[in-house]
Image (cartoon, rainbow over all chains, first blue to last red; front, side):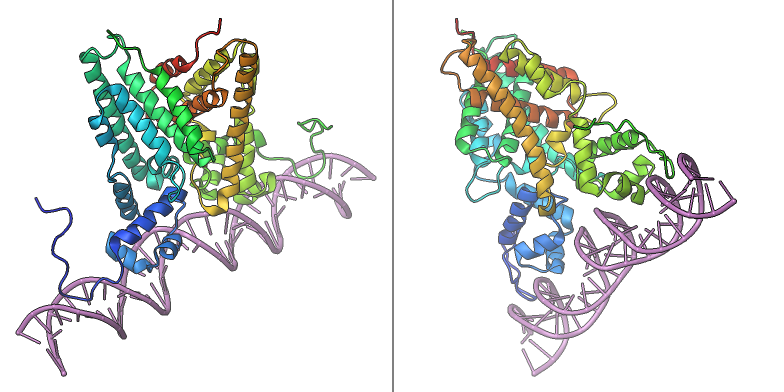
Length: 207
Length: 207
DNA sequence: CGAGTTTCCTATCAATTGATACGAAACCCT
DNA sequence: AGGGTTTCGTATCAATTGATAGGAAACTCG
């Protein structure tokens, strides 16, 4: 049960010469834009301003660096989990996820699209575990949304014959698609119009 | 105005020892599963059963081989264009595209997902042109669907205030998402249920 | 057969990949 | 100051990348 961020900074040995968080952020941006395998160590050292041995000493090998970048990506102030849990209804949860995606995929200071949706879609067999790790994250989000919809069903918020699994999967599919649309140059405004269309699939209130 | 398939087989020189179409198909399957950059020449030679110099002599460099594989992929008996043009209504066009995607992305003898949607989503700067080529194909399909919807609007098939652009983009987004869902292991049956949900966004008849 | 033509495969290329050995450098503590 | 400890950068590693040179092989035509 140790704190996630070690509260005691190193006191002995040569002091750190670069901020781990800053260079990890830089690595995340590179992986976000070019994907896991297409980002080379040379690209990373150039963008992070750190030599290869320092990267390996600080983060382990390339795979662990990427996974830490992913961890940073999903650990923002607003997460899929927080959106789902914070929404008053399942419908609001879905709309919140979609709108946050449309906005997050078209940030001015970040690469277009979604890191989870684009950085390891197709890769070599050597990176199959990285691919699976991202797929697991996607599946966890989908499972959370699925459960939220089932709760709404039990609460009578929606028609009893609603296909909760397909509804959750549809939201996830649209999110994936928004990422590609953003990468292809679609504007935030266009993505938000797509979201408002996607929300039309929602079943009417049961009442 | 020459025929696409040269009708005069070579008569002089050493005869071809392997079927160009067969090995191109094999290359397409590899690119489909692992993407453009993650598929190495060594992978290709192993799967195609042809040495590297023969590949280069027959198809040019790796980039042109990939583009020819893409051309083969989109040149099946049933294309997006044929589905859109053959549908009696814009709604049928969208449903046809979505259902064909759900089925095509879960073929028993092909990799899961869509080659156009997964083989060059994120890549290095050296492959930016390949990435752009696939994006162009996606945009052409979206533009065709967009125009088909506008025609339907003009014909009074749908409410006059319908956002044709967003509607077409939504269909494309769902298709992209279906590809990722299929890659993550979703069954054809699940994908088809997602499709039936996605079709609920369609505006009611104008009448 | 032999000249011409095209395709094939062996061997190899320079460049880049992810990753590391090793010693100098920079700090704390005594 | 000097031992202990950790981090830093230079130089380099083996393996793999996409790609090619050059000659043997296989055919048609004369």
